[in-house]
Length: 96
Image (tube, rainbow, N blue to C red):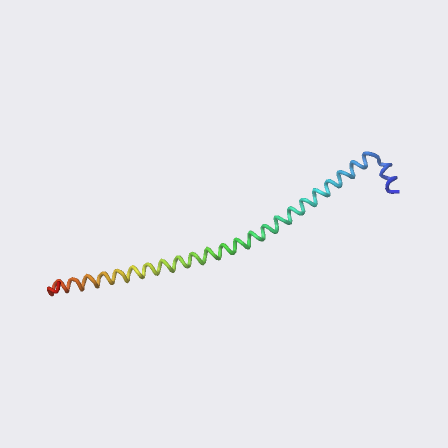
């Protein structure tokens, strides 16, 4: 009976049915694409958070290393000053 209805509608009905099917297929494809984009966006957000944490950690480590460098520079300066004092005393006492 459905075939008889299709025959009664003729070419125009078949054309319209094909257009509806094409639109439904395009809608499915668009829906799939949107889902993939949403999944990718969530993944990118997770990666961004991970990268932000790594950046923050690296910045903290950099700051700690810079502080250590400054401390070592101060210690080196103190050692150099002490060495100069010892050298001057030795020169002053005629030990050299």
